[in-house]
Amino acid sequence: MNTDSPAHRGAGRAPHPFAGPRPTTGGPVRRTLLRTALTGAAALGAGLAATRPATAAPHTPGNTPGNTPGTAPRPGTPGEALAELAAGNRRWRAFRERHPHETPEIRRALTTAQHPFAVVLGCIDSRVPPELVFDQGLGDLMTVRTAGEVLDEAVLGSVAYGVLELGIPLVVVLGHQSCGAVRAAVEAEESGGRLPAHIQYLADQISPAIDHGKEGDARIDATVDANVRLVRSRLAAEPDFAAKVDTGRLAIVGARYELTSQAVHRVA
Image 1 (cartoon, rainbow, N blue to C red):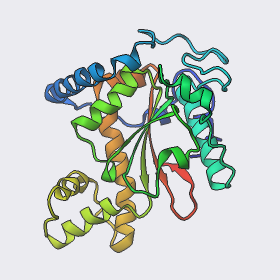
Image 2: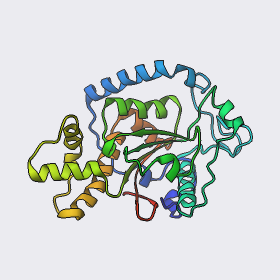
Image 3: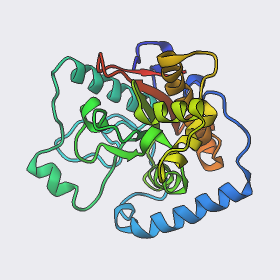
């Protein structure tokens, strides 16, 4: 994930590349379902949210809300969160992992509260665990994983809990090279057959992203990126998320992990 460009430097209001094109649709039914999911999530996680202020305090270096004693300041803006993930991925692919935030002191501190700085919506693929590929530790990331990053109401409610209840400033939709769920969706469409059990549901959700301008492995590869863009746009269309994006308090970005190089890069 390259943060060297001007679009990824600095803090405060998120630059336009963070927000990207945002559909204006969402509809009252989807908003109602999201609120319903949030109500349940808030009840289950009330103990975790109890120590978070109702409104996030302005971020200044060294006093980020939720800093654990003895650790570096938590990223408090979308730009800072992106920079931390990029630095962690550089360590990962250089075999210089720090495995941070695993000490007994950190573990004790995390028994009373959590203050993750990013939500990562990724695939269930066993080769792409976000905490490892971004070299983060306990309490750093809130991860939601489904095959092909497929969205449903439980996933939306989970992401919303992190953003709206815990004040997380960054959501990353993380696809990856050689995604089996994407391949299954593409091959099912080409053959006209149906996949077993609930796997067909995944294919149906990925189907709108299938790239019809390419063939073979190139089609699957292009569909991986298109699916990331589709999921990101659906998240960005949620009114509660859009309001935070518009004020620079949240970025929702698409990214992709390459199995061959272990690098994460943005999907525009």
